[in-house]
Length: 415
Ligand SMILES: Cc1ncc(COP(=O)(O)O)c(C=O)c1O
Image (tube, rainbow, N blue to C red; front, top):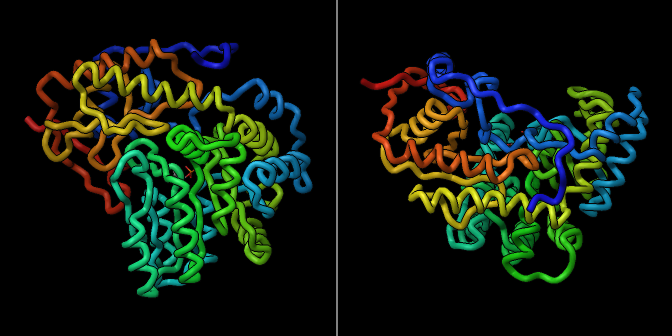
């Protein structure tokens, strides 16, 4: 069961079918463009959508706002050093800022970046720095987040690689774990070919939990987490996911030189480095969030909720990707043509007010942390299954953006 009780509640508001239809048309049938106050249960993202704890709210209230030298900054640095074991810590206001700054500093134009699976913004920021992202995933369970080591070595040996990035967990299919054997092998190859190894560790806690569960690894989650981070040169994360904050991120590195260069970039484009583009209260929420992120009771409850939703969907004959990941269930729509996932997202929203997201060809139900109960998830499973049984909605694309198709594409009903 959930390892907390509920102190503040937010009413769920349900607008009528007519209002949802109008909202859907206005949004070009793209769930990312819907006004959120028309949404009944929102599973479009687990990013920045979690509920904060009493400790986080208390820390935010206590935090003093100063231009530089904030206590909240010192506290955040100490917390991150303790959890991850890397000496230099630079807060930033989002994960993608970390990507943008790091790739400009670390990547030479023309080089490729090899990874298990790059997130959308990671790929774009690599491109903006003159590089090219290459995904080398494997698909063998249970560690579906691993990188293909043979292909990795082939690319590294060609001399074209500027960086290797391992995303923990792999965002594909709802948070697939990366094994420690794979991480260690990647570390060896990166050393051999003298290429820096970076972690995109936005979902480090889910990866640590699944690693322990799948391998029966000895030691606490904190010890296992530090072991993983001992393998990278530099790591960055969005603290809006496993960090349990509504905003924020950070860069962690062993390189004094890089840490120094980061302060220059941060002051040029974000704020004084002690703030990292954040208010002190946000830094305080991040510190408290990181301290809670590896709580085994919370992680078990969160990941079991994801599995619960998947099981309810499967019971109702809705096909989901398995093994189920740590933060989301991905539904694989079988009918509905080229835009089947968008059609599914639109039809479920229209019928029930439940919003899921679309990534590639999958309809994704991501679980905000500590927000929804299993009764809510029963409702979601029922709503998705009802739509799944009906004739699919058919959509035609009316606006095809040059980039970020899933966020900005627009559709209309095909009659
Ligand atoms: C794996 C991964 N990396 C990086 C990011 C970017 O982080 P942010 O949303 O804080 O900019 C995301 C966001 O969803 C992500 O899932």
